[in-house]
Length: 479
Image (cartoon, rainbow, N blue to C red; front, side):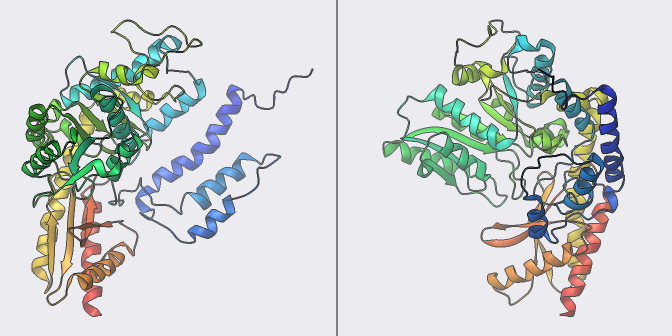
């Protein structure tokens, strides 16, 4: 039988393939400051060109890469752009792409420690670094996920299996009405009835009202329900609000509830002095969600779940099978398949470890401090602009971290009319595509968000953002 070597690739062959890709990647990265921050032109028609039958024969790689870079990539939200101030930016430091190339090329299995001891330890070491950032004790641990949604779900499953009996349908979960939708989804996917998730009102800074949350717990106990967990927030998506985590920890301790903190957006601000002051109490949580693809500027698909006690993860996830190799019994090392829902998984620890080993943590801390400064600068500038016009630019949510929310107010307009005005205002701000802002609803008011988090976003692009705000206001005045 003849050997089929058609999928083999020599070192030289791989180098030629990577060189073809690098020509386009390098040009893409170098041109990022001049690229549109968003582009949805012809999106449906473009997507239809990709929906094709599976090819029987291959095409030249140059043709494929040209199609990808010239046709498909430009019609996207440009999340790597310095002008991307929408949703929660990531940015994606390119160093991590090199780590992913290495990881994919060597194709090592890290789910069981003995299969790749040094590589598995890379992820364990990264997780230890994260525990230190949060202030967790030496007994803490965790694992890298694909993002905050999976981390929140794994946290709910872990808490349920560690704290509740098999019949848990009377258990209730308490969180802010500003919670990310993944919190509700995590609860329902973990088996809790949706009605058992209590969305508690917030104060004027959009932080959960701890006294109201306490009242809900008392009322639920009196009605025969089983209060079980609190989900606090270290940076909500809407406004970047940080709950009073110390007070939530006091309440959770008093009521014997599990405290999970969704710090997907804000957790890595713990690297800064301001962030540590604001997030005080996070170190008392039972579990914490982090997203390195947000606050550490890594590529999407990099999340993390930490627990104050690693044994909670083992208790929740360990299942034995005859075909598995011998698993770790030493506390010094960890089998990732024993503490997480995944058995087959990629070697995602390298994409965190390599950039931090190359640069150290100092530039990441400095970048986060810069983003805090830029959000405060933008708030001051919006107030200056408001003083110059007949209408009012209202700061609806002052930045606690690097998100702020504002809207245009015009005397005599009711809320539906103001919503329509601000929709048009936002559309005009985004028209030139030098920046991309997105809206949300706060107390049923349509507001415009600025989220500064991309490592490529600096004062020059924020000045452009304010220029676009001024231009949009002028255009609205001419109507």
